[in-house]
Image 1 (cartoon, helix red, strand yellow):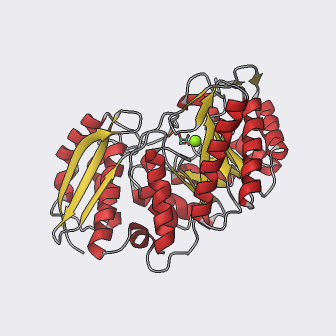
Image 2 (tube, rainbow, N blue to C red):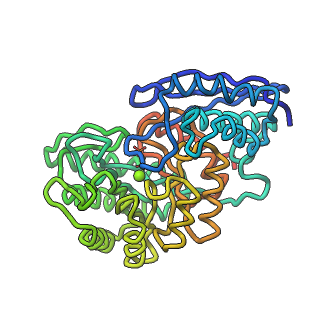
Length: 398
Ligand SMILES: O=C(O)[C@@H](CO)OP(=O)(O)O
Ligand SMILES: [Mg+2]
C-alpha cells in the first residue's frame, strides 16, 4: 500500500445541470482515482446530508484533506472512511457534507485499485468474491418528483429476470423503453423524458401499467426470456401524514397496502420499492407478509443505506430487500456494511443510482463486487448508460 499524497476537489455538472463534487486521489506510487457524487430529488428524510457543492468542498479542504494527505494509505478503505467520519464529527455528515465524503471515498477506492492494477470490482470484492452479475432494473416510465405532470408512481421498471447475461438484460431494458415509445405514439400520447431518462407522459398510473405490461410482453416475445415489472412508488412523496394523495384519489395506509398487494398480484410484480411511507415499518411488514416470495419489497427512503434503520426493519420483518446508495450514507465502507447486514439476514441488496447522476461508474463495480442480485441504474441516457456499459465491459472481461 502507498500513501495518499493528494486529494483534489472540484465542482462539476450533474445530469440535471446542478453543481456536484468531483474528487481526485493520487498516491505516492502514482495510483490515481477520480469519482463524483450523485444527487437525489426524492430524498429520504433520514439520508446523510448533502451540502451545496461549494460549501462541501471548502469544508473538506479545511477539515478532511489535511487528515488524509500524507497520512492514510490508499487501499486501506476502512481507514479512509473512518478519517472522513472523524473529520466530519457528526452522525449524518452534516459537518463536511455526504457528497464530498462519498466522492473522496470512491476516488480513494479507485486509486487503491489502480495501484494494484486491478479492476475496481476486484479490489472491492477481493479474491473470493462471488461470480454472479446483477440484473439491471430499467426505468421506462416515471413521474413523481422526477417529472412534472406525469404518473403518481415515481418509476415503472423493467426487470429482465430471465436474461442469460447482463448484456442481454441491458439491451432488453432499452428495447422495453423503445417499445413504450411506440405504444405512446400509437395512442397519440406525447412524452418527454424525466430526470432518469424514463418516458414521462401525462397519463394515469393505470394507463402506465397497461402500456408497460404490453411493452414488456412484446419484448419478451422477441428475446425469448422472462421480463417482469417493478415499481418505485416513492410513497413518502405521496404521504401527507395521514393519507396517500394521488392525482385522482386518496388512500389511507390500510387502503395503500391493499392497493399495492393488488398490483403485485395483478401485474406479477418482481420488485416494489418504497410502497409505504418511510416511517411505516409496521405497514412494510404487513405488505411483505402479503406478497409472494417472488416479490422483492425494497426499502429505499425506509432504510437510507443505514445499518441502524435496516436492523430495525429486520427486527420488524419490514421489507425483504434494501436499496443501496452510497451517497445516502456517505462512504463505501458504510454501504458495504449495509449490504453485509442485509445478506446475513436474507435481505437482497439492490445497488442504485440517483436521479441526478454523472458518468461515474462506481456503482456498477460495487454491485459486481458484492454479488448484489439487482442494480437499478436506468435504461437509457448517457449518465445511465455509463454504468450499464461498464457492466457489459466487466462481464466481457470477468
Ligand atoms: O428514489 C430513488 O430510488 C432514486 C433513484 O431512482 O431517486 P432519487 O435519486 O431522486 O432519490
Ligand atoms: Mg426510491
